[in-house]
Image 1 (cartoon, rainbow, N blue to C red):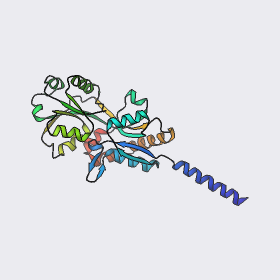
Image 2 (cartoon, rainbow, N blue to C red; image 1 turned 90 degrees about the vertical axis):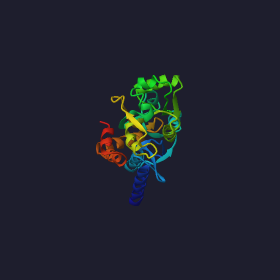
Image 3 (cartoon, rainbow, N blue to C red; image 1 turned 60 degrees about the vertical axis):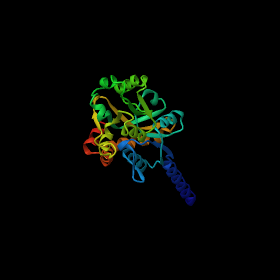
Image 4 (spheres, rainbow, N blue to C red; image 1 turned 180 degrees about the horizontal axis):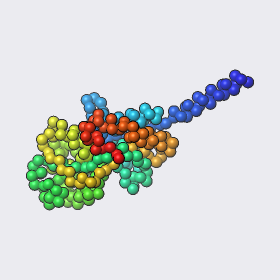
Length: 261
């Protein structure tokens, strides 16, 4: 009887351990975007990748990173065919199908090619010159002021909606567009880019309109693992891990400005 009881207890412990360890696998769709996720040699690197790696380590969840366009990521989340993504900006519509836990803040800045900057130093001056065009990444939200400005230009056929970050930068580099919108977290890397260095000016035109980037988890993911990952991310914010990760990929000053207060 003693042996039988011992075996039952061991089996229960093993079953409990297996249940505790079952978290995932979950697919986390990433997208190329400056310091958040970028190609580094033969590997992918960035703030978002390091945060996913740390979340997996702390929670024991199996998180499988893939790469896709931003518009497809939001479409898949809405359709219920994707589990997670990173640095997403919450909207009422998106909150209907996903849960958001913020971990960074940034704001959009207008980057103007030098030849355009000589004629346009404000959003209104840019809008008043019909030959000037701007490119953005399809599926992005840029804040109330910029989105309203883009809607005006879009009606005039002056906005290029690009599928990804690389295409956006190529259009800007070769002068197909005169301006792009970029998060402040990406500015340092763009100043170092050999293809763009010295070709543009940065205008901080809406300094009070910060956006928050969040861990995004589909509402179809069970509550227990979703809560576990959200709590782990909050702990990473509080113990300084998120700040340390940011400093790997941008300047200490930029990292400090990106922290969610």
